[in-house]
Length: 312
Image (cartoon, rainbow, N blue to C red):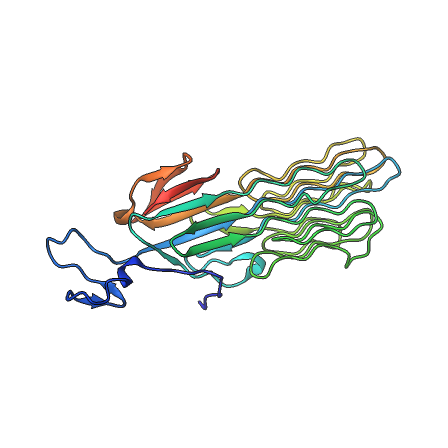
């Protein structure tokens, strides 16, 4: 499958000894027997999901808030899609003994009753030795008469907004939110928010060895029923006299928007996740941040639910 072009940079240390008399292959020095091993790079497959956007608050005059958008979704595993069902991202190459910093974005904090600050989700990243992969936090939902914010996936517009007054998603990471009615739904990693105030659906990945849906946009309540959230961890909006629910942790799901008929706070977006997959023979076992480590076939899978690092 054709790979999308992401702003990734790779700088291999093996390139600097250009005057060495030892043999080289594809720009990397090939070490002989007894030289201490191979200098060839280590191929990394990854899934990087940012934190979900916050849902906006509602007020006692039936003004509901929009649902939060999902965090940006970048996937290089196998032939699976990245956000907005774009093509698979390119893998990157790690350099032995280099440290790669992992940042896991937090979910946006739910907006106050009747309003919302710019509570976008936090960005998630892999960075080190010329590699920089960044997924963008989900856009927050819009309060009364306000559009949702842009983000990895866009937030839904608040009460009184038109269908186009919603946040836009980031190219190759997520989709747009939706406005209109009592408040719009947030966009998901895979599918934009629906016309019935439902959240957009996320995407499924088997990078850990089992298929898991992540990156769902949040639905919005707005005083007119309880539309279902998009699959993939998006939260639900609040019904009359109910409370909006948060996006699921470590899925990057958006937070539900608060309904009207009472002053209510919007829900929190879900925290993001960073997943690394490398050949087991190349796994160094040197990490910080207490990620979970499993094996799947000939590969080792490292799941960071919180920030940390990996030394190749």
